[in-house]
Length: 509
Image (tube, rainbow, N blue to C red; front, side):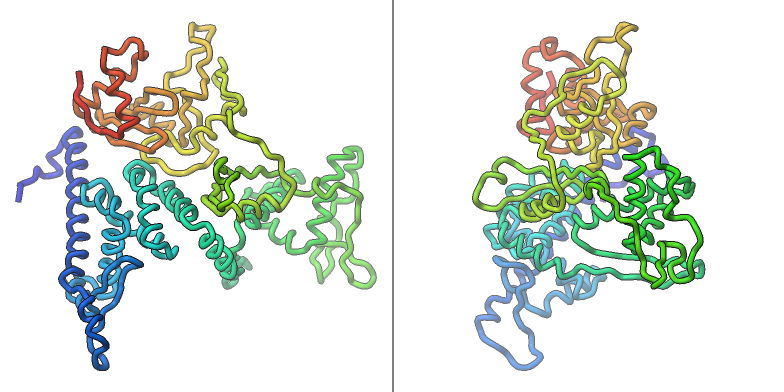
């Protein structure tokens, strides 16, 4: 075994190299163990035993550990395989199951793992998701072909969304049936009360209902703040649950707030949350002589009482027009069937804004990015521009890869260009601004990063590619900082190979 330099003796550059090589060694070791799991199943193939017919009570049987298309395995074989790894037989069963599913149903993913391009645990999770959906051997192979290319480049959460979307697309009818069946698993549970009179509420409900409920709680929390409640936002949202638990109180609060917006002169009206409290309702509503909760009914547009919300549904034209049901992506929810997206949209009146040619793509000269350009950048690149960063939130900074220089100080016009602005979370923005990370834009929508110790990463619509710190990556960095017309002959075509051919290494000029 090759002797390794003690970790404490490594400088920063050597530590970078050691991390990369150790990671590759880990990938190789994991892949070999996975291959051994599949080979163990081959050594203990149960097809012959199954063909021989049933044996006596308690004797060994042949079982199909994997999904459709995988071979049978002798039942007792997995116990020894697990013991060799200090695992129980159930864990050994699942490892062999996943190995067989990957080898027989996901040949591209299996090859990627064996080539050191993907972690085994990620491949196992994909195989489990596809098997749990009940996809056939052919459908599993289709999902494999549609997704495996992106496993090394996409952040894990976004890759799982892609797999989920392709599972839906592989069999939309079955996906819709699973969704309908899953609705039976909705619940509302409560925990024990604390000594301070607090109780935990846990609920699983339709995503559209949860989104609307949270939006309504947020609106009530805002109203409470406007009325002088100085508690933190989380505490005010918790109070909103109590208000919503008494519909009369919630309705009166929302009506009163809407009336004040319509008739500001009437702001001296009685506060529905003030006044003497009665023992039964604790001051949450008025009481008539019969102890019946009542509230003032006002002629208001019901829509004015709803919380303002925008639901972003991403749907391809193919899914929209074709007869066969497809897949949609709802921001904040993830991939869903088209029927489920229609249910979300059917809750309330909606305004459809087609996003074919993204509006507001013209650059502006100001440092502060207008909302129209922020919207365009998010629709163009919903992910984060920093390497291997997940999340599809809209709460991100838009960074100028080339530091902004005011026009009146000699800066060029149109610096806030949606084609080059980089959507970054706050930490990524700080790393770029203060942490010695540097970024260039080889072409619109693609970001080439250089770490403090000279390692390079390319983030583009396919995800993140680790390019290393060698001469090829250094040449790519150098040419990416030049206009295409100024690059040495032949360099531009080699740069394009990073995008179009997914080639990690190339010969530098």
